[in-house]
Amino acid sequence: MSFDPATLKYDDKGLIPAIAQDAASGEVLMMAWMNHEAVAKTLETGRVTYWSRSRQAFWIKGESSGHVQELVDFRYDCDADCVLVTVHQTGPACHTNRRSCFYRAVREGEVVELMAPML
Amino acid sequence: MSFDPATLKYDDKGLIPAIAQDAASGEVLMMAWMNHEAVAKTLETGRVTYWSRSRQAFWIKGESSGHVQELVDFRYDCDADCVLVTVHQTGPACHTNRRSCFYRAVREGEVVELMAPML
Image 1 (cartoon, each protein chain N blue to C red):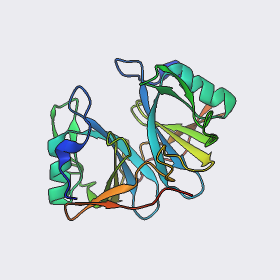
Image 2 (cartoon, rainbow over the protein chains, first blue to last red):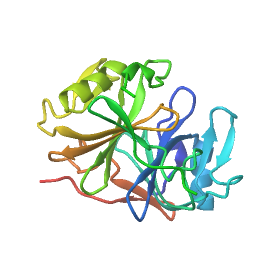
Image 3 (cartoon, rainbow over the protein chains, first blue to last red):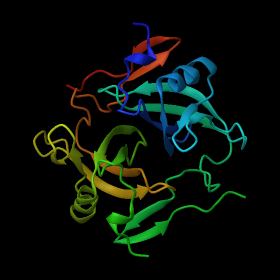
C-alpha cells in the first residue's frame, strides 16, 4: 500500500506529534510537531522537518545549528495520530546543547538532571 | 528541587503528551496523554496512568487488559511540555496486541508492517 501523508490524523491545528529516536542507541531525543507538508518533506528529503508552532514555519532540524537529523526510518502508530522517526543525530538534539531534550527526571519527588550540555 | 506536576506545561485541554519507552530494550511503545492528576498518580502509584480523551477518564494502563506499565523512570523535556516514561511493559502495549503501537513504517513510499500481533 502506498503511503499518503494526508491519511495521518492531524489535530485541530493540522499538527501531529513526532518523536525522534536515535536509530543506533534507541535514546529518545525530542518531540516536536509536523503538519502534513512537513511529513511529506521529511520523507522526500530524508532530512527531518518539523513545523515550528512558535515561528509558524517549517523547521528543517539543524538548518541553522548544523545539528541535523538524517531520517533512518519513518513509523506511525496504530491510531495514525503519532509519528516516530528514527534518526542519525548530528550533535545535540536539544537547544540547551544536551544530547536529548529529556534530560530531567523526577526521582523520589525531586528533579534530577541526567546529562550536562555537550561541549 | 522538589517536583510539582503543575509546573509542566499542559495544552489548552489541560493535557501533555507522554511517550512510553521500554526501559530494557529502548523500544518506543506508545504515546498517550496525561493531565496533571495523571502525572501525579503515575508518580505516586508507580503505575503509568494516562487520561483517556475518548472516555474522558483516567486510564490506568493495563487495568482491564492486564498489560500494565510499571514506571521505571519519569522524565520531561526542556520545554516541560512533553513527558517520557520508561517502563516495564507486561505483554503488548498496543490495543492491536502488538508489542509497540509503532508497528508500521513508510519505506520507499510504501507502508510496511514491522511486527505481528503477539499470540
